[in-house]
Length: 317
Ligand code: SF4
Ligand code: SF4
Figure (cartoon, protein in one colour):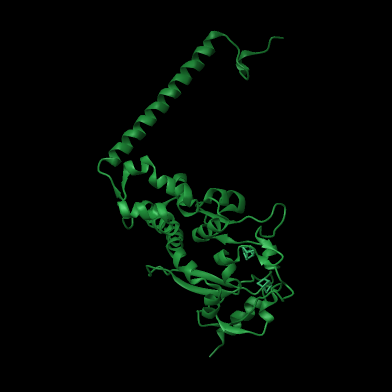
């Protein structure tokens, strides 16, 4: 029998282009890796000096609470936006220091937010892959090993399984609380071209409910939200008091609003009609304003007064 694995490995190693540090082999949790990172390694802080760290909503929650700032402040100071897919699904990454590539949280001793460091930092050098086959309803976790030459932890004399490494790095909580959001992302990615490009407003809602939790909370308790939706009193009390409950609610809310799946809030009777009335009134107001502007322009045109930039007026010389 041919050794396809070996051939595939050679193919990757012989590639005429620079190899991706993520080896294209999927690993299960019981796969053994050789790795140890500690203050004594020669490459200490090398990985945090040149970052490309994608953040999950739960990462934002942990970090903003660690820093004791609002989600809005956190997003402004520590993140930069990127698009997860070609339809502009909003994602965020850690913003490096001004004019450099190092993480803003890196200090000589290591990571200044260590106990609340993001999921990607905990996993490194393992990469978490969320995959879902077309015939499966939920996603499965698989892993890949990132082997960058600059990371000398792979040369350390310690072997352990990926599951042991995950336990050591405390990722279980992060995996659990990030699952709802990962499934939303997978769902949007696999929605297919038939669904069409989502309107900008749905990307804005996705961004707010995913990352800007404090603003999302204000939105949920706002009068306009409660005019439209019925939120059970107990749910409202929980999400006002508890960030993690709010995050859970936000995933379910996005699932309901963007995919019409599940029902975390009931739309109030007559809310749809009221919304349509408001939209109609708004459209009417815009039309009236447009008409008024147009009439004003017509008046000016026949008044003979020259307006700045009006080329039809001609010059005085
Ligand atoms: S958050 Fe901490 S571990 Fe992650 S890149 Fe920044 S300094 Fe490194
Ligand atoms: S061993 Fe790897 S993970 Fe640890 S500091 Fe060095 S580069 Fe970073």
